Amino acid sequence: MERADIRATGGCLCGAVRYEVHGGLMPVINCHCSKCRRFHGHVGAYTATRRENLILVKTSGLKWYRSIQDETPDVHRGFCQECGSSLFWDPRGKQNISIAAGSIDPPTNLLTERHVWLAQKSDYYTVSDGLLQHFEGFARADNEHREGQP
Ligand SMILES: [Zn+2]
Ligand SMILES: [Zn+2]
Image (cartoon, rainbow, N blue to C red; front, side, top):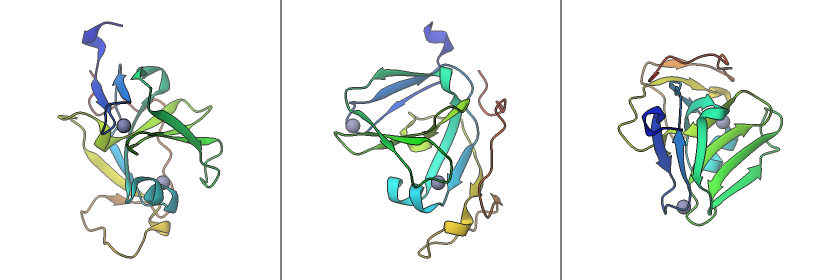
């Protein structure tokens, strides 16, 4: 692919995982579920893209954890086994893959749109930013390509 196709770049803290996104990124969703909180150490903030848009350019640190605790079937969570950075939420067999928004090199040109899984939120923080809140999940439309379309 040509450099001009790159919508975003990102990676882990130590550099053992790097990726490029060659296509549209979706608005950021904050997930408060118990799995994301454990995986990220707090709320999980994700953008997403069609999986063919995500190009892994350095994978020496990349490890996949099959998250059988997730409500969604066959989810694998990707992280760097060198530095521990939480990077990907991958529902295998679905069109989109979610990317931890904090791992994208700024400026991301993304906006946070909504909160999901308030039903599983922890009790040490409040959500008061006025964004949409969902008690449970919110399925992104597979063709949703609004924010940051190149
Ligand atoms: Zn790393
Ligand atoms: Zn979650």
